[in-house]
Length: 430
Image: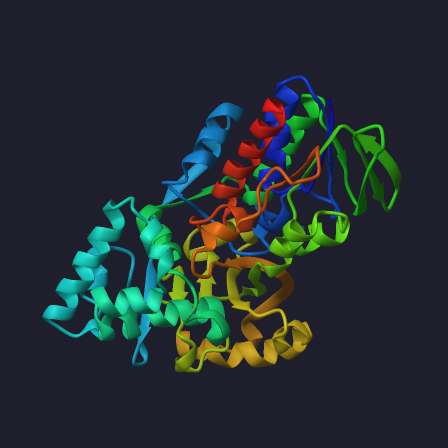
């Protein structure tokens, strides 16, 4: 078969890998100039490694990524580290990277609250019964089983920061289960950065015969009378037997408005949060304690959800001696941050860095980069499993694989690979 895959994120490339191995002719379409999707990175001339545009790492439990590494023969390039994560409480930061450190977190108080927190954590870690949890919200479930104080001190800031006031009280508990059930405190990255892996994966695919059409946006998908699909792109039209779209639901609805009304409505009814991430290069280390990940509650006055000091995970020497930090937030696409310029956001963000290090000065900043996307975090509402679009669309030969379909798991490259390969399997079986 002649197959088109739209998108060179890890899911699209994983699907292409399985499809070309099965003897098909595959072309990958990418609107950008490099592969990687939301996991792509950038690199300054004096940097040895690239930096991800949107902060990324893998968990050691990410079985689909690690299986792919083994298949590609690149597992020796994967680095596993144990950086420090902290939580904010009354002007101070406390370790939050293990059950033990979480139990010592002073925001929980003492006695019964800590016992309930520990028992709930263990239950979520070991149970596989997530289905009943999607029938209730995080707030309702946590208040019932962990208690009001544990919820308001520990989990409400996370959910509120991730989904905003608009959706925080509507997110179902299965989403929280998935985060606590599978994630690990040991993290992994790739030598050279995520972009290095994307480039090597693309090179392997090219040697296998996969064609890459970079800087080529797909404008419309049209089914042919005699079967197959015609892709209208910024560089002309091409016909294929099968098409796999690894893009956002909203983008698919625009590319293929001829989809049946109920499937199209399902795509448009899915909710998601966007992301705004500013990356800064500093002359000096920001966190004197060497913390990697700061969880920052919105009610503490921070203008973003997370501060990540990338060079407390990796050596600054990989980046020309610069200390790299991310200031990131998940936001409704209508939020004002999507309209503000880099300079305007710098004015909003930089004063809060003094809360991390009182010695910080704007003169420390040697470089800044800003990225935004409207589609970064799917919003799983009650009974979300009933509303997930099928990978095999009602239109013959058109398949769809996105972050919105990996539920109950959270978005990430690991589950992008899983659903990409699942889509490829369905195409091969058909």
